[in-house]
Image (cartoon, rainbow, N blue to C red):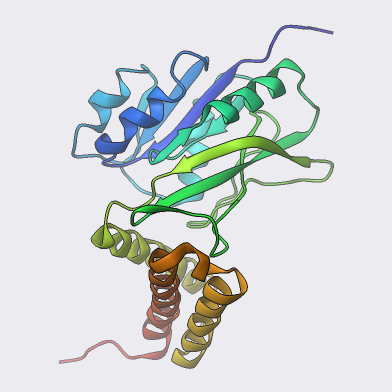
Length: 261
């Protein structure tokens, strides 16, 4: 049996992330073996920033959805393990130490989850159901991959795969300002409605309203969003709005007639 330490790749899918990418890649530079960046058609300085850290920069501008794009990015990875990051995330020293412990004593058929701590509108959000916000991001490259969902994609967990939590946080600087939030949320809503429409699903405005109210109550009351101060209130309201919008989008597509002359 080989005792050689497994190699580790960091993989990202990006678009117009020049403002974020530098700090993200700086948090892993020097201790990972490979960095793979798959761009979906940036018009800013994203490529120049990425190439400061890696030659493995690829472009697929024909956007297929989040899941398929991640699967394509993984096909470029050569290392034994893959760590997924978004450009607005930073690996903390504690998380790095935990990852290195995994590589020093790898466990078979194991996917590792990471806690994300998000900075939103001026503070870290520790309630609202946003923390620890565990996401499965580290696993052996040959073990699994993301599914093909267009949005809210997940790592496939087949029979016999164990999920183990890592220590340390992944810092997530998710929104620059309110406009950034609204733009991102509209993109997610559209992708969600696209996916549901393809599956033949329908919606109603009443359903959207019910889910929106439920979203607010869950985040602000049940998940103690009020402990996050004004940011917790704002985030709960905005999340409820985003929930309503995605159901409204699907209702418009599937229950109304297109405009006729």
